[in-house]
Image 1 (cartoon, rainbow over the protein chains, first blue to last red):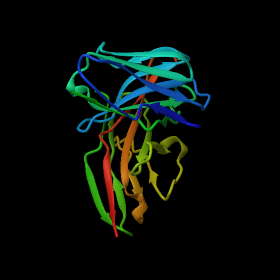
Image 2 (tube, chains in turn brown, blue):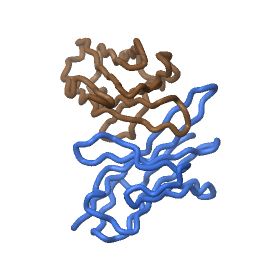
Image 3 (cartoon, rainbow over the protein chains, first blue to last red):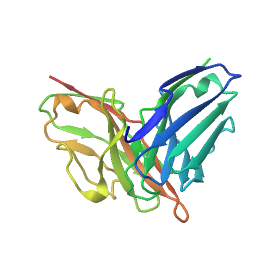
Image 4 (spheres, helix red, strand yellow):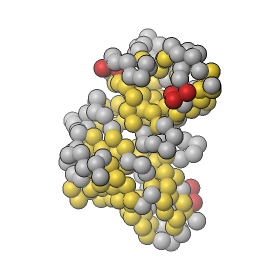
Amino acid sequence: ETGVTQTPRHLVMGMTNKKSLKCEQHLGHNAMYWYKQSAKKPLELMFVYNFKEQTENNSVPSRFSPECPNSSHLFLHLHTLQPEDSALYLCASSQDVGGNEKLFFGSGTQLSVL
Amino acid sequence: AQRVTQPEKLLSVFKGAPVELKCNYSYSGSPELFWYVQYSRQRLQLLLRHISRESIKGFTADLNKGETSFHLKKPFAQEEDSAMYYCALYLHGSGNTGKLIFGQGTTLQVKP
């Protein structure tokens, strides 16, 4: 599949669980992003990676831990989450981190924390 | 503070009517603005960017630095335009860093 692929599409987890979200892009891009989309808030940037290096951490709690092993893969490791962390988590990629870069989004992982 | 504001959560118009989705921004630097769109059951995707000065699907947006606005307009709305629209602003960081921040989004509903 081309484009940005996220797995799983849906995830239900308890507050004591540990899970991971996966994102993969087949576009040859160098930059990858995690965004959080909640019902009552704007799309919030969480992390930015450029050439596997983290360039942005938007004051995200440590219970969210990103990992970027290479330019094509991005993970978000989750542990001891809270119910308010329930949201749609979107991954995106772009050719580079730059002002006029077009972001390509995945379909997202709908996360529910019980 | 740097932010993007879309004052309308929902905009409902009839087919053939003009559409204007409002976006205002607050940014001390040189603004680079975008409109992203999410159709039902589809991914969020880029609609247009101000630097390209393009018209996509009949939509245009002009950057007005005096009013710090980047409103999205279309003279005649179509039912297939019904979607969620997000205005976005690129914030420059140091070196080769930066980030794209989004407004709250406006749902456009075009009625037949």
